Length: 261
Image (tube, rainbow, N blue to C red; front, side, top):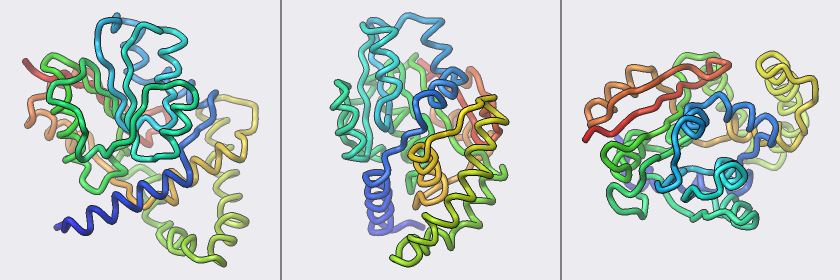
């Protein structure tokens, strides 16, 4: 049972973590991932010119920048817990505000399309965050959700690397992580995955690789889910499953839901 103090500490830890390392895959890989997501398909299939799109946990607003380039009339609002990510997004002209996905400062039934791409699994109460996504989505509107998959190899890697997160809190440990552990992760996980799954022949830049390491290994909170975990909760709260599939490397689960009328 989480106490209010525990929850606030985890929210604070997560906010501080992503303020120090705003998530940045690198534009090329992020675009490749985006084009395999349901939300990308939606933008090809439907016209959202007169609809509100809310991107909860938008990071530096990659989706917002994509929409500005390809669909400039779309009404986009990004929300992120990291003040640094918000600063970067705003510097590029994006409509982004700082916010906590456990308590979104938006009215009920605000958006026609709500996006949560790899976010609720980094919150201390992921299903409370999911309920907030439902609350702000209009009846008949859509929710695009991505979460980590339970029992994938990454699930066990995250559990096994708890000592790495402890180490990183100390000056000596930080040096060990940055100069010994991270280079192994970079070669065996990031660079190999880039070639195996995305068929790229270029090397992922160190900055992007470190961002992935920070997001997936150093992150203070990570939850993992089965398909049934998500679908059963969604049905309980009035959502209809439209599409679902695993991510390209099997690490995550993608869902597209409609909020029932």
